[in-house]
Image 1 (cartoon, rainbow, N blue to C red):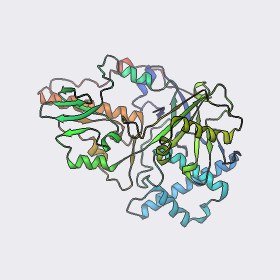
Image 2: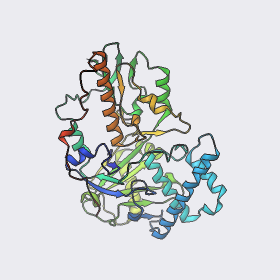
Image 3: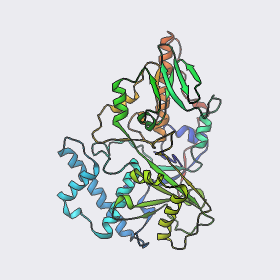
Image 4: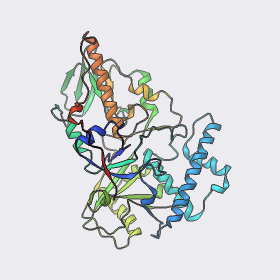
Length: 417
């Protein structure tokens, strides 16, 4: 239902030691520099609204056109000092270069590429920042689906820790020498410091009361960062009735009406398809009951495969309205200030901020970004407390993670079938 990929299958990825040490396997879904980000074009099959397959030659050619359009948006950025949505920049490009304008089925395929771009950023193309869309620092090595899921990683990191589940925090009171955290049932927990890793959607919704109130610069930082939404509808069948490709997509006249399924059978051996929805469409899907959402998705599938069997089980995510997330991960708003992530990351007395939204080197929206941001917050917190106690010269900083648990010379296990 949630994070599934390792973005950047390389030793520089901060999660590599854990994934190697736990013996987790990865399934490669793309190499570097794919126009579809975390999928390769060669393993996609697209269908139009009538259920006819789009010729692969057209899919490839429109992909090349999309790359050319995106390259031209860089020139638009150079010509306009003010930021704008990527969709507006694409419109300017098409006006400048009418030869890049597509008609009919080719136009619908182009809309599908925009739909995939929206899925990467978890927001609509009229909300994606032209200034920053291509500034993300993507690690090398392509993208790998974590076949066993991230649960083993979470469990390994949680070993021997005192973790209290079902303790939703409602208030954080920041004193000079201590912090008090209040949970929903009114109980208080007192500590020397707090590391806050709640999703950016929780901060934006003011779900937690701060005493004293957050300073204006911190409030502005929270406001100036966007929050994306992407949802999944997972369908399990009793048998496989679809082609052996990784992505099954539906093209349409607008990116909103496009969609795609991820074929988990290739990666896991289980007869499962996962429908992905991002941006406004993800929010609209949450307005339906789980049954209605599954029925809608099945209708999309039956357009492609009229003899599709009904699922024996389905799961539907609700990241946009889940009170513990209120969105999936951070995204850049059009016109965001350059220092917004630094301000969000900055500690406040005894409160330190972690989570994917504050990750260094533009790794927002990734598990390794969330992980490295947490390590950094822990190290900063530890340094702060040691300084207060006057021990900073005498005590070495304890590594935030016991890496000796995971040290190994075994390479990352990644394959493609």
